[in-house]
Image 1 (tube, protein in one colour):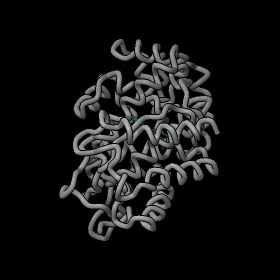
Image 2 (image 1 turned 45 degrees about the horizontal axis):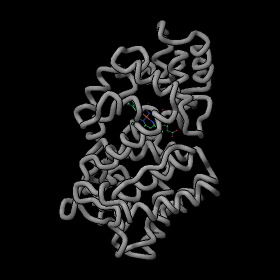
Image 3 (image 1 turned 180 degrees about the vertical axis):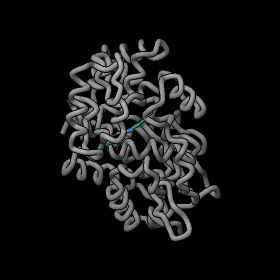
Image 4 (image 1 turned 45 degrees about the vertical axis):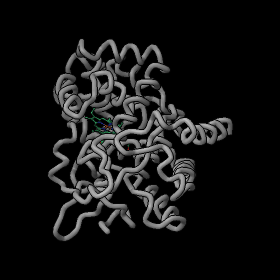
Length: 314
Ligand code: HEM
């Protein structure tokens, strides 16, 4: 209740003191005249959905990353494949993405109030922000005004980072998009929520190395005995946004190779230790990095459109 009231106050302050957050043609008050209810509709839709299934917070946050990292934050991840085009969402890297129905639901409600005004890309960005807060994470501001892209191709998803990259490869991949090593570690902290399937980490089990705790190897092996789709939580509190993920890395109990590598490498180890020690520092850096992620290569005006249905081009 206190958090809900706090959220309303923050949302009002958004618009009043939002000017410093306006970037690249986006603005805090973008829908103030054209669809003032948009922000609240997204927040309510996300909160209701996550009350029914808290595990979907992870899905929404991951959706933002997979949208923004490929072709920018333009809702290209939401487009369905057609007979002439296989879309991003059908790539193996995206098959376990979750939460599409929440975006559809918010879009439907918004279209009923103000048709053709609020982009699907803005809805994803707002929904991810609300999911972080709903899981007890930090609240951060995002400007609006993204347009929806018209391209969604399976081959573009080769640019999503593989879970077998080491820290310097992760730093390079994210660095090409303007992220610092600190951003990489903070953003990886999104793995404080959710699960990985056995297929994403089983290769680590054939030749376990000294960077893996031996009893954790047993845990992962047991998970995989139920098959490739068996789910392993990233940390002990899979629905709570906290710094337990970084504590797990310190205990050599990171699920993915790309998680554990962060605490094995000098360039990132101190950042991991800092977040494990100080959750507030993790929250602060995570918000900054998510703001950066939410603004990645956004499309403006004639570079895109406002889709009527997030799954189909107009
Ligand atoms: C650093 C590079 C990253 C790699 C290699 C990576 C890889 C993965 C993999 C392999 C999974 C499990 C997928 C499955 O087995 O179904 C996963 C899950 C997840 N990822 Fe990442 N990820 C990265 C960064 C991020 C970032 C930047 C975010 C968000 C800001 C994020 C959010 C999530 C979340 C929340 C889940 C859990 C999803 C669920 O439970 O549905 N990841 N990631």
